[in-house]
Length: 87
Image (tube, rainbow, N blue to C red; front, side):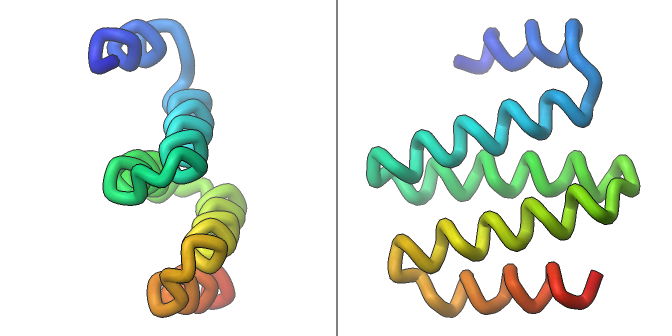
């Protein structure tokens, strides 16, 4: 899997890579692999933050909050929603 991301990083923009990472996180989450999903969410968020893409960063935070909520991880969901709202 790691080799795949090196390939995407060479061909795509960092913003595209963030989108790919977010999608992979959602897939891991739907499979019940929440820790792995969290790692990918964090990486996607870090890229958006680094790029200064506040609108995308806030949207990702909101979506991450929704995902955490659906996983019954309500404390994490609230934190994500609050961060998105602040932006």
